[in-house]
Image 1 (tube, protein in one colour):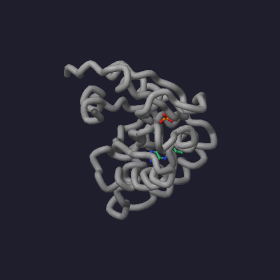
Image 2 (tube, protein in one colour; image 1 turned 90 degrees about the vertical axis):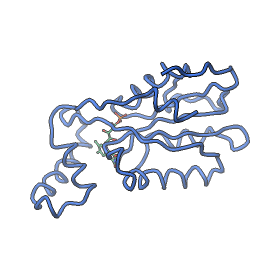
Image 3 (cartoon, protein in one colour; image 1 turned 30 degrees about the vertical axis):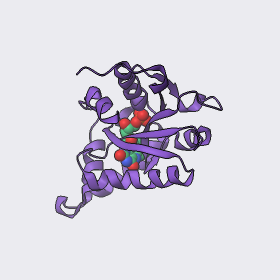
Amino acid sequence: MELRQKGDDEMALIIYGTQYGTSKQYAEQLATITGDSVIDSRHLPKELPEAHVIFVGSVYAGRMTGLKKVLQVLAPERNELTVVTVGMTDARSEELVAGIHQPIAAKVAEKKISLRGCYHLQGKVNYDGLALKHKLVIKPMVAAFKKKPANELDEQAKMLLRAFDQTNANEPTIDFAVLAERMT
Ligand SMILES: Cc1cc2nc3c(=O)[nH]c(=O)nc-3n(C[C@H](O)[C@H](O)[C@H](O)COP(=O)(O)O)c2cc1C
């Protein structure tokens, strides 16, 4: 897909918030298409030169990695924000995705920052590579879900079971050109 060449004042800054690198990888893949600069949410300057900020961050127990830091440097009179969440929640489930985006949108609104849009990308999990603090959360949860009959599990539980009951990360297919086009 051919994207229109952007002028200097239309360039965005892509910020990522990550724990295991998926969101960084996605932010960089998106930047190869948009031509925008990419920066880690842990290394932000006090003020951002670009008016439009695209924040790509992973979701852990409903919270977006790095969101607080990003909101600290955004100014309502200067910046606009696009949010891209990365998580195991199925991107096709409008209800579950809305459940992730609603509290984020509320935090953005609290800061009076204009929100251009919210998108969700399928994340990745490699159980073996998780830090102990994360394994300690996941293990009892998966064990409890496995004890229940499948028809008693809700969609969120089924999603988590699928995501974590495997030892190797599955590589989701994401069309970053389509995402970039939707954001313009
Ligand atoms: C302890 C833990 C909690 C998680 N909680 C959620 C969640 O609430 N919603 C979701 O969609 N994904 C959740 N995930 C999946 C991560 O968001 C997913 O693995 C993502 O790709 C991680 O991105 P990162 O490598 O950029 O940190 C969780 C993963 C772990 C290990």
